[in-house]
Length: 297
Image 1 (cartoon, one colour):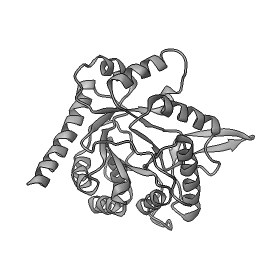
Image 2 (cartoon, rainbow, N blue to C red; image 1 turned 90 degrees about the vertical axis):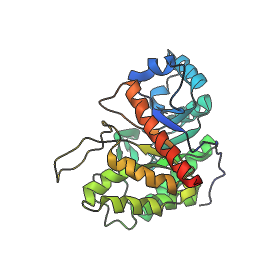
Image 3 (tube, helix red, strand yellow; image 1 turned 120 degrees about the vertical axis):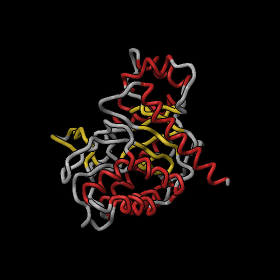
């Protein structure tokens, strides 16, 4: 399949954003001096066309550049993407004109009694040609509907993929090459998969994973942290902690590999204060600035 024509918004690689969650809505709007460069909103929280949501969304977009992150599109779903869902998603993108649009390389949609059924979770794909073909077709459909590029994000999978015909990074690289989509690299997800299935060699696994990707396709990096577990236990990607030391270290390497990517702090559970979330963004910005200084010397 040939690559679709792309609509690229210019996103400064020094931009650092945060994921906006409901407990921070009021503070984000009340803040007059911004220490974050953009906000990421979850698409499904803003599909409503009535009530306070449109008013709130307009107020947000007047104060901040926004990115739209889908959590329910299911780009790897063999049954395709529900047309009603895609219509709502496109309507939101047209309303906001975000700097970035993204979703996940996973499946979510099936059918029951000829009705679309959503799994309610990000379910892993098998990294083979059949899954790649499905993903490519769905990405192409979405990009044609949007009239612009979408970024696809790697997920945490609690299934061992080491025997799959392709490895995850190769699979995503092929999807980007064949569709012209962008990539959103969640560094915490890479590390969690590495720690769960490549114990003792996680850092090298993660770096090799990143080096497999086409650098120009990576347009955004997510940073997060997960709850610690006892040795040998499965790590669950709960995004409930500050960015981990391992994630910061991988971020420093990712900056050099993907100099054109924006950065986002994700914190989804056990939410911190708005001020604490901004501190994480400040740390990311400091690391980025130090890297730029080093490169100029």
